[in-house]
Length: 150
Image (cartoon, rainbow, N blue to C red; front, side):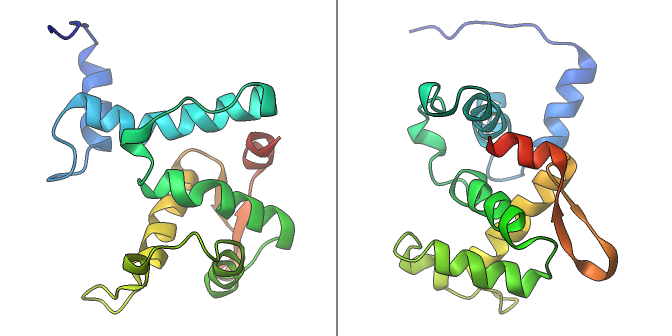
C-alpha cells in the first residue's frame, strides 16, 4: 500500500521539526500522532462533548499528553492556582488505579516517570496556551484550558 503524498510549506515543515523528539519521532506521522493529535482530540471533545468523542488513536494512547492532559486541566480548574507538589498529589489521587507500575520507576534524576510526564504535558499545554505559570511557581489553567474541558 502506498502512503499518500502531501506538500507542506518550508515554514510548516520547520515547525514540525521543532516539535519532533529525537530518537522518539521517526517520521512526520509520528510527530502528528504524538503532538498534534492530542490537541485535536481535546479540541474535538471540547466542542462536542460526549456526542463528539475524541478521535480513536490506539498508537498514541500511551503518550503522556493523552494520559495526563485532561486530569492536569481538571485538577488546575478544581483547585485553582497551585504549586507542582500539590498538583501532583491531587493528580495521584484522581489517577489511582490508572497509573502503571512503570510510572513509579525513578529516572536517573530521581524523578518518578509519571511526574516527569506530567511536567512534559504541562510544558506542552503552556506552549498551547492551556496553562500558564503564575507568580512564585504556581500553575494555573487559562480560560482557553477551561474552554477545552467543556
